Image (cartoon, rainbow, N blue to C red; front, side):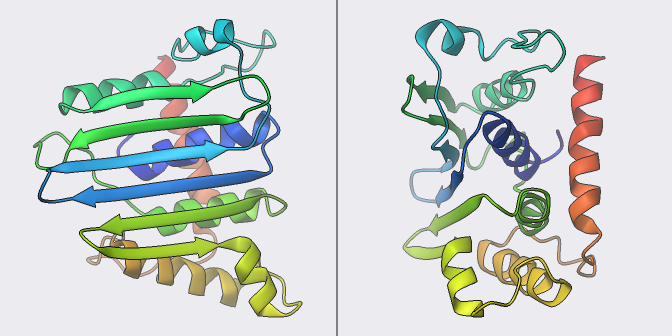
Length: 206
C-alpha cells in the first residue's frame, strides 16, 4: 500500500466486517521526538489470545474464503523498517486497537496520503458506523466525529455530495494529508478509494 491512509482504510474495513459500530482513528506527529504514529481502535467483539497471535499472518482465514488481516503484516513491516513499533491490543469482548509508529524523518516512511478520501470511503460504504478522527501535531489538535456532525446537520443526510465534499476538504486542510498539487476530487473518490485498497490487497497476495 502506497500510503498510510490506505492502511487505515483496510484496518477499519476489517473492524466493520467483524461487527464494530464505532471506529476511532488517531494520527499524531511529534517533530521534537521524531515520531509519527497512527492507531485504529474499534468496539468490536475483540479477539482471544489464539486469534490475536495469528492476526498478522496474511494467510490466516476465519471462514475458508475471506483473508483476515491481510494488510497488517505490511503495516508492521513498514513500521519496523522505519525504526518504529507495531502492536495489536485486543481481548474477547474488549474491541481491538492496532498501533503503528514510525521515525518521522525516516526516508522510507510512507506519507499519510488522502485521509479525507479515506474517511469518505468509510462514510459512504458504511454510513451506520460512527467514526471519530483525532489528529495532533506539536500542540495543534483537530477532531472529527460523525455523530456530532449528524447532530449539527439537523436532519440533513451526511452522505450527500455537498456535505461529503465539505468533510473531505475540512479533514485534508486540517490534517494536511491532501496532495495540494492536485485538484480536489469529487464524490466518486469514495468508490475509487475502496477499489485502490482492494487492488493493493491483491498485489500483496501475488
